[in-house]
Structure formats: C-alpha cells, structure tokens
Length: 474
Image 1: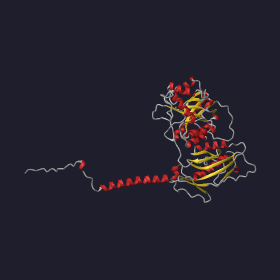
Image 2: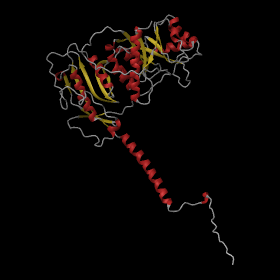
Image 3: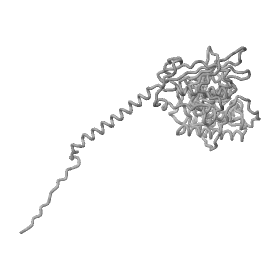
Image 4: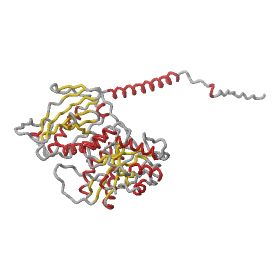
C-alpha cells in the first residue's frame, strides 16, 4: 500500500492586492481627525492670544516707581516733583497707566543731563526715551515700552520763588537705598508673558482717568553692509553714570564711533539719539527719515555724515542712488550732489557698502574729485580688504581717515550680539590707547545702542576721549 503525501498549497497574494482589515479604518480616520482638530485648535489659540491686548499695568507702575528712585538717587528730592493722577489707557493693543510728572530742578542741574542718563539707564530694559516738543520747543521726555508711552516728565530748569510742590506719591515707593534684591530699575515683562498671564488684566482703581488711543504701526528696518569683521576676546564692565562731575583726567587717546545706516526710524533711532552726542551719525539718502534724522541729530549736538551708497560685489544689494564703477564723472557728481542736498548738515562722507567701487581707483578718483572743493572730509569704511578709497582721498589732499573696526554684526541671538559688541568695543579701545586714536563703525540697532549706553560712560576712566570724526581726520 503506497503512502500519498498531501501538500497544502498556500497562494501568495501580492502586497498591492492586500486589503487592510476593516477594523483599522475607523482608528485611522480617528487619528487623522484628532490631528486636524489639534492643529486647528492650536492655530485658533495662537490667533486669540495675539489679538488680546497686552496687560502692561504692572510694568507701567513698576516703571514709575523705578523712575522716582532714579530721580531721588540723582539729587532730586520728592518735594521737587509734582505727580499727576495716573491715567488709565485702553487701546486695542495694550492696557496700561500713563504717569505724568513735573520736575523742578535745582540751580546748576540741567535737564539734558538727567534726560541723557535716564535714557541710558532705560535702554537696557526695553524702555525708550523720546523728546516732547510743543511749538518746536523742547518741553520734556516721554518713556515708552515698545509703542506705548507709559510716563512723561516735564522739566523746569529753575525753581520759582514761593513754589510749593505736591510731594511725590510714595505708594509702593521704598525709601531705603536699593539693593540687589530691590533693583533700581524693573526688568520689563516680555510681551508673551504679559499676554499669557493667568489672571489676565485686573481692573484699576476707579479714581484713575481713562483715555482711548488708536493703534500704531511702528517702523522697523535693518540694512546690512558687506563688512569684514575682526574678533577680540576682551570682556568689559560698565560703571554707573552720575550727575556729579567725574574726576578730571588727561585723556590718553581719542576714539571716534560712527553709527551707520541712519534714516529708517523706529526704536533704534530714538535709542541712538538718547546717547552721548559726541557720537558721529552717518545717514543714508533716500530713506523715509533721512532729512528729519539729520536735523534732529544736528540739533542735539551729534556730528552728521552722509552715508553714500556705493557699488558692492553683491549684485542683489543695491541702494537707491548708489554710485557704480561704470558711471562717468557727470553722473557721479550729480548723484553725490543730490544725496548731499538731503543731508545738508553733513560735515563728511563715508561709504555704504562699496566693496567693488572703493577698490576701483578710477571710480574713487571721480568721486573724490566731485567733493574736493566742498570742505567735506571722507572716511573709508573699509568694507573690503582691497579698498583704495583712503589712498585716493589722501592723493587729492582732502581730510580723510579710515575705519579700524566694525563693532556689530549679526549673531545667532541677542545675547551673542551683545557679547560680541562688548569684545569689539574693548579691542578698539586698546587700539586707540596704543595708536593715539581709532575709529569704530557700528549701526542703528537696538542691541548696539544698549551696549553703547553701557560702555561709553566707562571711556573717560580708561583714558579715552570720545570725539567727532572731524576731530581726527588728516
């Protein structure tokens, strides 16, 4: 009897013909639906948070207290300060208090000094100081967080006979000397933390007045030069400013700091204008605020320069009215004349970009020839190692000098930018002490203004005199 072996035949079904078990379809659809719902919910929540007005009540009150501390620490007694009832401001973007003060100064104390020191103090804390003008007359300052003015101060230079000021409100005002646990200036809340505060904004006391203001659109633009930057690991420490006369020292060296790319407005402009007027401001032509910035800077005592755009190796980086290497003498002269008419306060010129133009001897000669009889000086920004600008200017026998170091450039984050500017600032200080003078160039940036406010007051103690560019050109 023969044995027969029966083999089971298994048919292989191609992968593309296999069907998913029916039970998995609802699960898959559920996962897709939940994911879509999560994405939509996240977008709606984000949109809601963005649309909520910022709660700046606490920030505005802390700023008022800290400003009062600042005034007290600078020889201004509470009896010299009149404080009006705070007003409650409601706008689509923020809710806050606006505090108003009238400060009667003692003889010999100038409002410009207090304004400058207060502005420098606030720069590092996202608070901006702006001038208040009435009929073109300077009346005082306003203090703002972003676009929101949270305090105003009117200064009266001389105390009138028989003046009896209402004492400064001391609610929440600590009368002892500030310590590390009690800082002399608040750190403003970040907008995100203000919007997402669990308690939301709290209703203010009923006796505070209410105003409603329209929404504002701030201007914020940034231009970048094609610059080559050096590095120097050298930390810096800042000394606090004071109204008392500093110890007089014979300066060992002179330092010029030129702030480039002015003319686009925004907070960076207000911050720079609050700094030491011994800075030199270089303003671009054909920008929204070219003429107004030049006028304001000149009135505040800054030296003004024209930041003349010139052709660079990056074809995509083109500024209106720039000088190109293929232009003839008449075109170069015409463009230069038009640019100078926009900045009539200019004492000199330096190049904006120009890595290609300044390396071309013929083009530079045509440009220098167009300004040789104008009485202006020229500073070579040195945006490229092959520049011939300084040598050409010397050959035409016009006052000239060249940049030694750029202070700022773009870093990964704000803290890295600040640390880099500090390092470069100290490098140019050491160079000035070694050579007798030096020139540094930086730009209209918020981070740059912050570090300059910190470090410029340290120059005198280090034997450095900050001067305008015209004082060291040869």
